[in-house]
Image (cartoon, rainbow, N blue to C red; front, top):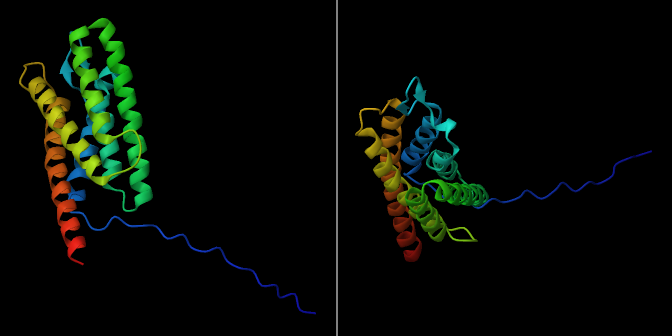
Length: 192
């Protein structure tokens, strides 16, 4: 007696790849450095160093580092969609933190709220565009370089602030490289 039953194997899912991007070598490590700085001493306190993880209202730049690291390491469209969801979540968290800061320190809260709204407008409410992600990385990197650079110029600055300044500046370079990669890819795609 033969028990041979034909079983159809599931069809392999085809993932659309994003292609080779030179920015990944810069953007990924820059985001990782920025995220790691969340756990390093940032400034000198009265009796002990102050770590960013102790002040949740200052966490969005570091969390953006994690989000851009995920976006840089995304090789498929699905991975990029996941990274964009993380970026939107971080942006909404930044807006929530800015709203709380607005109650205690209105000038700082207003600036943080404006930055959060600007990043959300660049990233968009829905959909996924690699160009928008790169522009968001450019904005966050430039503002992070300015923010951490101002902190680094003080006497209270510690290793976390210096590395965060470096990570933010590297994120700017990675974002510019990303935009150039996208432009070259689009130009090549139009010729074909």
